[in-house]
Amino acid sequence: MSVEAQKEARRRILHTLRRLRDTEVTPLDLTAPSVLRELLTFVTGPVDDSYVPLMAHELGLPRDAGEPQWNVHDTRPGAKLRAAVIGAGMSGMVMAHRLRQIGADVVVFEKNDDVGGTWLENVYPGCRLDTTNFGYSYSFAQVADWPQQYSPGPAILRYFQRVANDLDLRQVVRFNTEVNRLEYDEQAGTWAVTTRANGTTETIESDIVVSAVGQLNQPNIPGIEGLDGFDGPVVHTARWDSSVDFTDKRVVVIGTGASAFQAIPHLAESASHTTVLQRTPPWMLPAPDYQTAIPQGLGWLLQNVPHYHRWYRFQQFWMTVEGRRHYVTVDPAWESPVSVSAQNEELRLALEGYLHEQFADRPDLLPHVIPDYPPGAKRMLRDDGTWARTLKRDDVDLVVERIDRIEANGVRTTDGALHEADVIVLGTGFRASEFLSPMTVVGRGGVELREAGGTDVRAYLGVTIPGFPNLFCLYGPNTNLVVNGSIVLFSELGTEYIIGCLRMLTERGAQAMEVAPAVFEAYNQRIDEANALMAWGASGVNSWYKSASGRVSQNWPLTVVDYWEMTHDVRPEHYMFSTQSGSSSEGHQQSPGSGAPRAARGVER
Image (cartoon, rainbow, N blue to C red; front, top):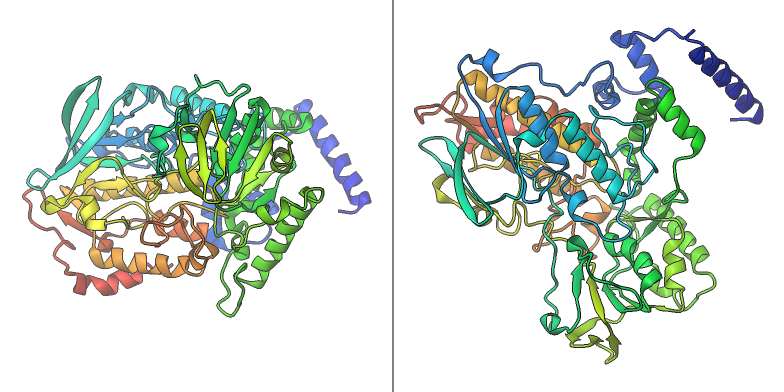
């Protein structure tokens, strides 16, 4: 905007704020579709009509768009639906909320002593969001008092705890209870859920099971020779031991992924010396406000102007719908080992320029902090200059030689050097592709999930798996987001899809439902083909985005609107249904061959 336009905008805003203060403002009727669309497109600009329902869903006005418009008892009088949800983190909480809204008998099993999932478990120093926290919130539980744009872990945990309190969710959660085994009973059409709490094993029966354990819950402990023989404490960032004192200690950190990247600057402040062992440098996105508080004026608007925080959140959501997706999409004609398209090369040069600025006074470090792979092939991190300041400290060493073994007093690298340590910190990530681990999951025919999927557990829409009726997943295979969208949104959409499945199950009076194999295969073929055309699929760099086989098992490669459309309605032809007698209902007797034409149509947008 020109200077003159900015002045005029400020004049109009001040005039309106005064009218608001003096109660001269009449609220608009947002139940009128034309009014809502006009306001939405004021933020977004002209958009296709297909986007509008998604936009209204995220705004959360004039109502909670995800709230079920049915319940079990009205749909089938006398019916009961017993639901077991595993995990009381971000996904498990929204699932429990929606299940209660439809009148299901819900129990949530949580291994920890409180809600929050990963935000309860990850307490390493520096833990915070690397996406804006306004988008990292439920559409139906928006708040105005975030302390920062990228809030620290405790603030995120407080948000989820507040939601649990407001929705009275704790009454359905069994804390300190771990699920060890799930086994499907084909005759009864139910799941046997075996749990362990306080040394006692119990098995309950449930009509459906929802796994909300997520992808980032099992730490990856590297198989480095000698790790068990180290004399001092060994701490993984995902299982932080707050009793370990790092003051004036020699600390060796293994890894420079997201968690280590956040923790290392804080560790360096108290340690006598910090050695950073790096295998692959990260690409960093400049974020000057990464650790700063919400400006006072913005904070006032968020908390005092009606619905301002909703529109602010919506604007941030809209910026992520496509996000940087076009910068990481492969151009098959592009030939370069460090980029996948002209736009990806443009992004690479910009990010490399940022690194040159940050390390201009340390040319010795520069070759070791510039990645040799395309941006987007691995998780990109947020930086406000802290990383460079930390690595340039006199008491910090960046080591790029490979680890040979761990000895009693330090880490030996392949160049023969011993990096002495009093404490070793493992910033080695998670076993992300081991979905539903460490549970044993047994489906139809006594087939165990690991046997069925091997190292590549797949799911239709990240939600359902053939051979495992009435088992649903949230934040399941291929629903992780990298450069666009919100994982909270995806969990909400997955939840709403599951509620739609349960409605169909209830209306039919069916015992169980499972996705047709042909639909499942066609969908995953599309996902694999799309992932191959993204930077993370085209690059050979190591990444937690891939399973042991090399398949991209984590990431969603399509658009946010694609997932919205795929999960918006449950199509009965995509499923097979079992009746109470164990016989097949309509659709169930389809063979994969006869179901193939429907499957092909079903995975189209």
